[in-house]
Length: 227
Image (cartoon, rainbow, N blue to C red; front, side):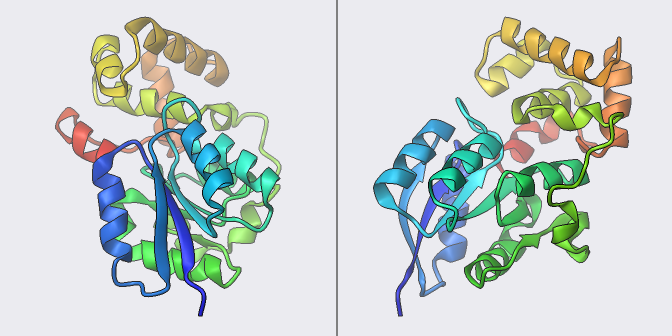
């Protein structure tokens, strides 16, 4: 029986190590490579020709959604499992419409990753979190209401919004995301423009209402960003 070739993509070593550990007991699974940026995962995909790509939603250079689009455009048969911390119907819709086969919350990685892998290898789709009990097909090509401007946020903008909700300053956010303070301010301005709000308070209210970000504290920051 042929083994399933898997490519892992995440900029956190802790996550890559966790995925390797979870899949260690899967006899059919063979990890053929690891990437730390969106550009790198696309390059390694062409070089290694994996059967399944397990990738983070937020990565430097190119986010998981755009990387999924490029990979699927090159090979429609590839199976992509997206890992994320955002339990949002809007994000499920964006991920699946980009061509991913599964959506797994990082908080449920240990319990759900194998189930997701089994599902996609059988040609099925899979989602965890609050969406796990709902038919996945309902999200495909679903029209987005005009007032859901938040659905247009990029993965990086979502991450900035999450950090803002934890009371982090632009300087602190830049340090965590390894970007400049000016870039953080640009992301924040773009978020406010897309969501048609005029203050961070309004921004966070809409983000929480749409379940684009989750409640937490600054102390959880590094843990949540690496789970």
